[in-house]
Image (cartoon, rainbow, N blue to C red; front, side, top):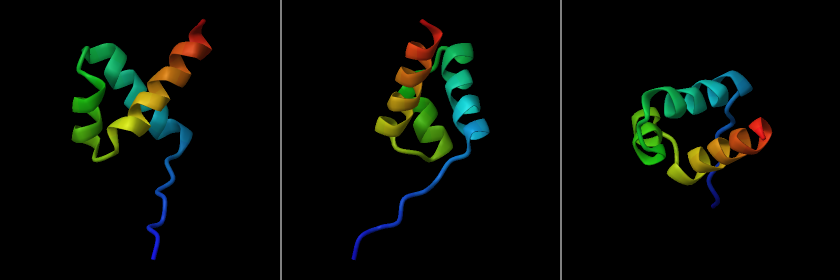
Length: 53
């Protein structure tokens, strides 16, 4: 049986990305602190980086 995907609202995503930018912590560390997958966090940071360009 497959696992269900967690859904994160846009405010949570934005806050998580903001933590990476403002604290200088690694993506992996922020993801661990928030209890989410590091790959997911990396995707959010990448999308934010592209949106800023």
